[in-house]
Image 1 (cartoon, helix red, strand yellow):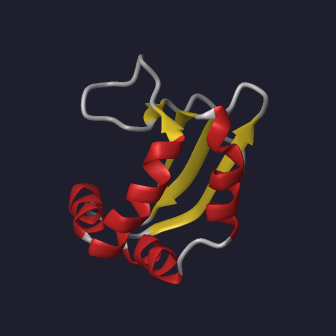
Image 2: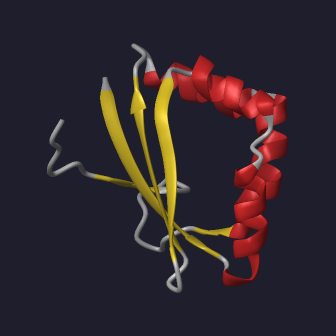
Length: 109
């Protein structure tokens, strides 16, 4: 199992829309996330800075393949098309990242 953390900005004019979308995530997206071996997925919002922090556990054996499966899914492309305009990627993110990935420096079970 691998824990992951990530951050991204949220457009201040889109906060209500983003909350509405995530209060009723499409069932197909929830099923896809699970089928891609992601568990305990949580997104937190810090207002008024409008920073999103996401965390999840990856329980699979081929992260790249699972992420490719997710990216190729037509329903997920629709989901991203409504969610991504709400987000503001951090300027300091690594090349190829949308959400900026974070290093885990402490964990306690």
